[in-house]
Image (tube, rainbow, N blue to C red; front, side, top):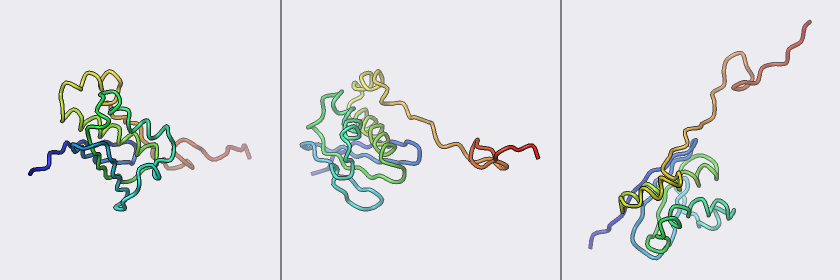
Length: 134
């Protein structure tokens, strides 16, 4: 028996999520920095769990797939949004007809905002040392 799975990669800031959708009953397996973590324990905030489940709820595929995901880097919010993008891309690989639904909700757009680099002569990206006349 061959394992059918659908893959999607999501990125946000420094977070990278590799998401695999396999047919199943809705179990979520989470590997964060090479350690297996319980999904509900890792994402304690309900708002982050909602962000992650958003593409599945929109396409009504919540209980069709077991989700296996690998996370690296970033904070909780960035990781949740990276997972959301990865799940959306994997769903499109599963069924191309879901694309308009996900596109309309803005779930296929990669958020390109990242931290601005520190410039020389400044204390941070834009913070300058205090000015004094003498």
